[in-house]
Structure formats: C-alpha cells, structure tokens
Image 1: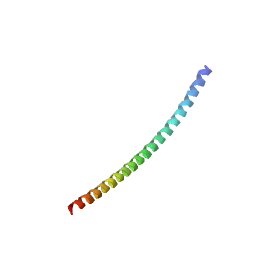
Image 2: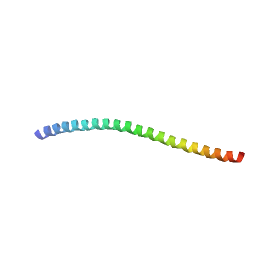
Image 3: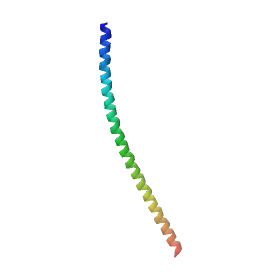
Image 4: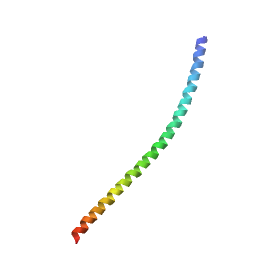
Length: 71
C-alpha cells in the first residue's frame, strides 16, 4: 500500500516536471520561430538584391552591345 502511495507521489512529481519542460519547450519554440522568420526575410532580401544587381548588369551589357551596333 505504501509502495502505491509512493508511486502516485512520484508520478505527480514527474508530471509537474514534465509540465515545466513542456512550458520551456513551448517558449523556446516560439523564439525559434521568430528567429527563423527573421533569417528567412533577411535571406529573401539578400537574394532579391543579387537578382537586381545581375539584372542591372545584364541590361548595361545589352545596352553597350546595342549601342555599338547602332552607330
């Protein structure tokens, strides 16, 4: 009988510990989600910047080529 009572008490302590770990994990996952979104947005802008640089460079090259043949 005492063994059963001890098991119930231990189970309650384990459940409280599990709840604490769950709360910590939930808070950490929220922080991870925010950080991941920031990184995703930063990489999107970086990628867009390079696409614009390449496009402008190609337009300049095409402009130079077309300009040479029109004279």
